[in-house]
Length: 158
Image 1 (spheres, rainbow, N blue to C red):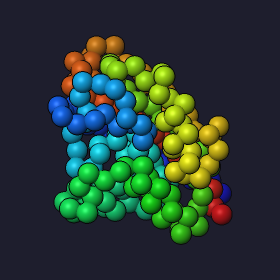
Image 2: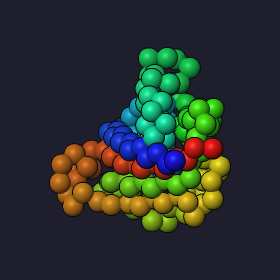
Image 3: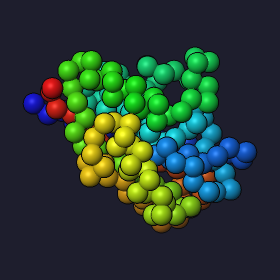
Image 4: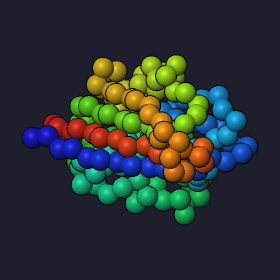
């Protein structure tokens, strides 16, 4: 049996923070605002994995009201979510992520993002897709105010 989950996350840009996406520090003038490192890629993917296993969401496992998660490495949270679904009898087999932002361009960083996510999930890099899109100048993303990410995860019963 296979299960599919969908995740979404968005964060606004903030001064004085590094931009972390897919576990990679991306050179940019701003980072993302958030309680953890605000990695919107890892957050959306965590929600997709948890959703596929009907295991809640990132906020129920790693709430931003808990000081333990202040500044947390979001790829570590993703790794913990994969372990949690494994305990429930599932294994991640494939993931697909779309990052929506105007700048910076992510193309040069996608191979490293894929490798980091694959390692965290314990799956081959060719089972991880990461794509970047713009919002064609529309809305908060188009105005350069932030980033949104969508993710899909496929799990199999072990």
